Image (cartoon, rainbow, N blue to C red):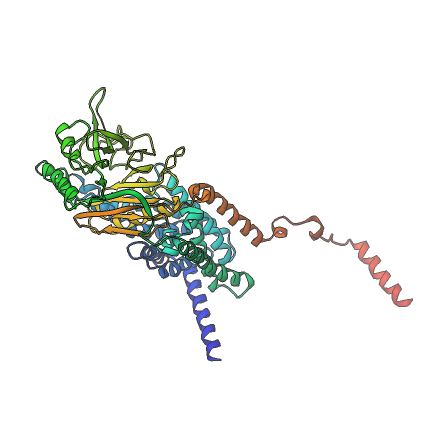
Length: 558
């Protein structure tokens, strides 16, 4: 009896809390939305505390219930997004303080302006919720609209799919494996549906409410079950590698303020040369430096190229990031990767294609009289896009630079699929913040999504190696100087059409959601059948009433 009373009080309290949020206004409504969005950040790296994800999403649904005007709905969604992005992307502002004399004025724009813009996607996505008539239908509607908004955010203009809401699931090994089936956008849909459906706990007991709770619990259980099975069939970590390939990742640990200071250029270069050779095992035949590790352009600086080739293992290569320059017919620069052999011959090169707005180039530069935050006044030129290197000494590889790895479905060449992915990055801009951990997590997601090994070399960390199951083989921690000697893991050999084409997965999941919502509302209620449509009774005339009265009296006499 006491247990029953306890349950009743529990659900009664949830009902009262949900009703209070739905009727709230002003500071209470928007402050709650802001704190709810902020709390979701704790489900992402480096915290990865998943319960807060499930505690926060129902609160958003309850805040959107009741008789709320469209403007209030938009503002509620916007404040939720603002809390999420301000707390999740705060580290971008630290890049403006590396050269504070030049860029400190951009700090408010990076820390508040960018989150305010990204929050527009969340604000617009909650508007369709006004068509829901209970928490169950609102959960379905918001899953579809917010999941679609996340896809649009990742593709609109230059796109910025950083910290997609589905990464709350993808931070956990077993749940992460589902990315191999539906991609990160598909996982975002399922994670949102699971979280939002818990809002039916504040709804009257019904079959729909019970079904909502069951689905909310079964979704992560199903993904985790698939993950357990998939990982059980995978080889032991560190036991399955490509024969004849040994890699040394070099992490210089050079602060960003010293990276391009002229008095440190030679010192920085010598540091990488020294670390590349120090106590190197015989089985290492490739050395990898991070993004722009070489302060000198090795394609036209003969002395630097000769010094770099001297540390290349016999029959192997040095792969390094650098700035590639062109003087004629016009001045151009590229953020590039080159492969250099022991004879100082450049075997391959790759130019970064997906450039960072305001970081590597200024959009609409003719209208904006500002310079990019990276070194130099000349904007970087974009490369031609993903490509696959075929070097004699390495399996086919897709080279990427920095945040190019965050874009689903665009990290490999369409015509020549590689067997592994190499990412060179420089996270020194962001110090000891959440940024490098989030960036590392995204690279791990790409490994599972593509079913390919990902090798990540970072200037100040975190350098790491992931196999095609997203399992970490080894790493160099943040803000550490050192080397990482590793074998090249074999890829998982799993290629999922839906994971690679996550845009198609997103559209299909959205259509299925609309179908479920349509069935929930009922076909007969949406499109009434003529046979069951009630006919309106015409009002009786005075003569008809007299005839009816006379006939009733006649029946009594008979």
